[in-house]
Length: 315
Length: 139
Image (cartoon, rainbow over all chains, first blue to last red; front, top):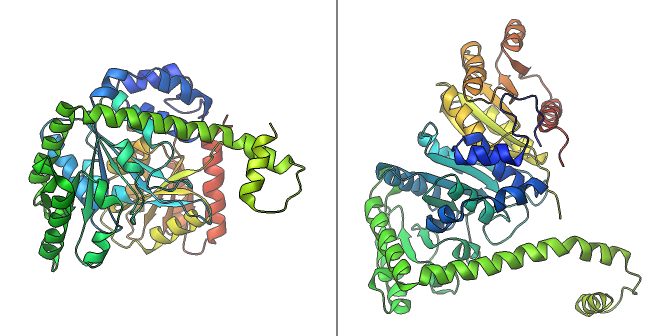
């Protein structure tokens, strides 16, 4: 908790919730921090969020390898939604150092043009040891942003490789952003993100190799596509110049409308809910298992897997 | 439950000065000391830095200036934070700053001023102390 010495001390969950309702940037920021720190107050705040706002918000995932242009594209997507008068929340995730636990959170640099806009709420978060491209508190942060009136919430993942797919769960729609020059078409044949992203984006489309990449992506999208033609279109963008962004927004809207109509959106959210419950449940029992391991007097020999089974049997 | 305690700080450069070597050096040093560092880059207005500090819920703001405009810009950030209802967030500054400016900067609300001779350990220690004071005892 912050000390009460500040000008706007946010001591109680009531004050923070009031801040959320009033769209007070400090209240929103504090609420996210409390969740991130597993503060006991976080439960109270999360329990009191307006579910209908959370239900209505569209959660858009932006993922892709480092340097593909995710932050710059996110900046442009924010602008487009702002011109449509949507209130936008952004969660920008960068990796924590496995050595120091520290992090440089630098996604915001590309979005500073929006910093004085009261209806753009950007929060940078570090992975804090979590693999999979997100941080543990990302889901709760999304709901807090929704609870503070953001109707579009963009999650920018860490720069991903091939298997960081947590974003697929959390987002209603996921755009995979690629750029030319990061690998040949064999990379694109591999299983993983390419199979599950809703929209494929080739950014830096003005650079050499972009057309070939877009063709490769299109053939992949066609192969897996099937019923919905919109999935098979690859969006080409030059985020630094804002080119192709309106087209991308159109694709997002089409997919969103189709998911809402088909019930896909509800199905995904239900699945995501269960999986997040599982994550938290595991997180909550972790300390007791750690304690058991430390205190166990079972002889430490043999395969760790067998030992783990014995440990669990002990209770 | 595991409780994660991390100091979050913002490092930014107000004004037109584009020399960010010092700011990046401090950002990396803080990262290596376990801080989460929101880096806002060069050529920011005091208002942009204040708004980012509020949204990011940082416990301290570090400013860098090598252009000689610190007497105007550093206090302007303190003022912008106050206007955002976040006057409690401590502001530290560093860069090419003449000794005679340090006193007036502190009078203007800058908690500490670092110059090119300040050892990095001392800077980190000061950020840590400032963060701990700001965060208070956490539950």
